[in-house]
Image 1: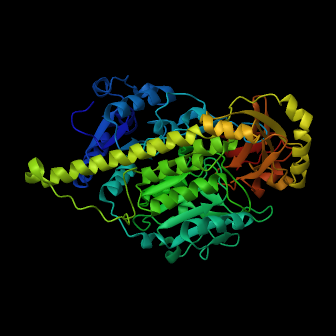
Image 2: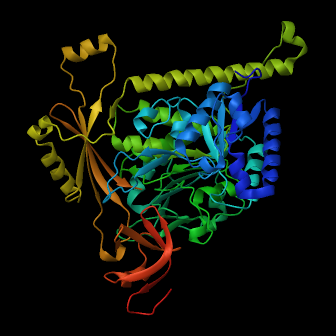
Length: 531
Length: 57
């Protein structure tokens, strides 16, 4: 254990950064030093840990990750765990894109070559969990660490991009929550009812909602001036644009090329869009970086989005809607960006009685891009006055610092306990796609599900069935449940299909499905469409 | 979709609309030779030539 308490750890792979940037790596090193000094002024003791350094990793009783293994999820997870367990930081910042520290390679529970063809739900969630490396998202349902990623450009060679991001993190300032009231809220026209609910949940109104089409992608300076951005549109892999939808028309709603080079300082964004936070290599698409990289380069403090195909309903709220809402709600209440991400994940788990395969994918795919310690909104809670007494009387600054550390530690432990409690009371779908149970067949589940799907225009979808594991409830609760013969979830069935579209839109990568949680003789249905 | 010996891939013109790109409509039913980058299940095409024609983009 470190002798000096560490509040924030920046992990990166220096060897890999040197491979990318050569001697210009020193510019990044200098910028990290500036951030560490700025953190110090804010009362944060920040430490840089080089995952490729034998000495740094020996100090953490971990194995170094050479540049040649920088893309190895298991090696990086093991190394980050060793760093975390040594320093127990309040904030863990991953510095670099996925070619420096990779996303973890969680299997997509609803992978279907003809439907949701993401084999992997690329994720930073496992870095936020104590559980050891695994490709199974079920193993990462107790998120307890405050984690964010400050990316450079995937396969980039110009260090100025990430240097600017480090400068933004070093110079950030807080604002009152009222400054985050005005928003740029963009919805695909077909989802405007869903987006209306989301905007009301986060901002208390939906009066500023933009609907595409006809709105976008050329926003006015006043619209760009809003500090909060919420986007519920379509997205695609290796693409810097988001798309609206009306019928079979998919016009551009939001374009990274049109993002001002300097957004209002402090802009934050939550994007429900498929691939909305994908950190793709821009070279094969002509050098244009994605929306996430673009927002951060333009001065955004935090970007919350998805690595892969994300889901939500058309006219209500669920999946991506909820986790994005939770993130912005916590951010607006004065949480740091990293804590808001953690709280969003825990709240997503807490609100469910059963986590379905699409819930597992949602939890896996949404991550925070940005310095997790950045706290854009001033907390409405008045800071307690610290009175140094006794031996501390001669060093009031040290007293304030140590009490701040103690407060953060205790708040993290409270959240840790809440995350563990949430996991202990939720049913979870198995990653293994089980054979349809004999009971399900007897109940005619598949026939009922297909009939319901047909009403939604889903014909001949692929059906997958997932056994559900129950939580170990307290004996008293179990006794009560048995006494009144409460039904329990046993299986989750997913019927999904790539949407039938006209020939001229054959490039669509849209998935629609029904998810049914099977109780004793009853089905709880959820209808989803890809964002 | 592009059917190949290695499997099926979605086609996308570099910078094109991934959901609806009229420039690719004439390729439906054609055999083509294309250059580009494979990104997941998508071919990001820089250029292509229908076999039997000399058109290149």
